[in-house]
Length: 333
Image (cartoon, rainbow, N blue to C red):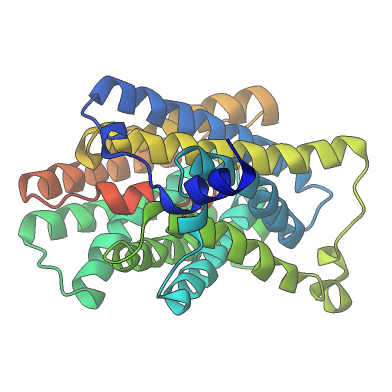
């Protein structure tokens, strides 16, 4: 096979439709594998954040994470197609919003215990319902509105240990507020992905996001001139290893996530997002000696129940989110 024929194959032949099949158990297994990969990323990130600024962590996540994603796209024969788009503005908007979510999510992970930051992140699918109503004109009936309301009450319960005393100047309160902001940006990113999915391939969306987010994250370098604590650092060997691990684990998690939605519908495997809370409690306890308080566990259970009900209702209404979820890039875990 000549080099020219290889290039032609990479550019013109998309993945065959036979690669998408109904295999729920395989989809669930891949989804669970993605949650593990993302928590490896989150753990490495939380350790590295002690010495590395958030902007540099975001760059590492996207730059090193780009390589596994490109390998996946190339394996599917869509490497050339992945860069072709008629909506570069939409991709840049999605990258800017997604990058904002990532910055907020990483900051929350640094400032808060792992279970707390994870529980706050569960607000994202609830906010998506609200944004879909206002921005996409999607019809939302009383059942989903009720679930969203209950879910937001659960988020308030999660936030209560951090904001209960009204001390908005401490790290815990700041982390909680940034975490909620990050959940909002992540929800807005999901809305932009839904719009892009109307005209763009999954491979195009994930490739453009990784590439654009890598470039945009370089804009954080000058922050060190105004905020010395955010100045990029030259990492030692162990820190460099953590940065590479953050990106590779995130990229591999993205592959598992994307593939999981090739084998099962969103309504089947989306509830397994909430396994992240189990990993957060285990990793937080074993590595960071973090034990979640009662309010966080109770609030997380309320939010999880509301989120699962929303997924159930969307399934009953025939609202298939499979394609949008396949093309999404989780902000932190």
